[in-house]
Length: 167
Image (cartoon, rainbow, N blue to C red; front, top):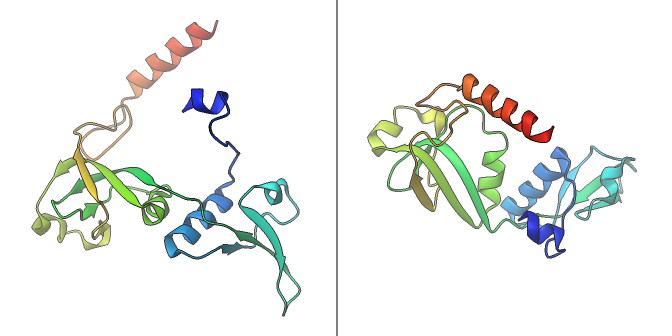
């Protein structure tokens, strides 16, 4: 991806979180734009997916945010069953918005499980969330996941190695 960007084969722009989530919401809803009231009067208004608009009734400015096309979303979850029902672990960090916007949803999981196990956690299950499920145990290393703790020692060693390499 880096080489393609450096060679000009990809269009690259900075993306503010509000614009990003509004663009994913528009894509998930399959509408021409989503509205967002943040970012008025800032550099966000120069974003290629953003257009300023004025509400006819109130006269207030808002932003129209066009959908970001998402062909494939690669996501992580604790577990899934064979039907693509996904058991989430922890905060989603915008993953749900990305999943909803994508044409193809690939979810990497720590383990495959039965639907019967998933229904014991209805507050953490997203039904039919994955088109493809990939079993990848311990795939969140060195960060915490459902089957492992944060590997602080490894992260510190990695950071020290990077610091030495930059000297």
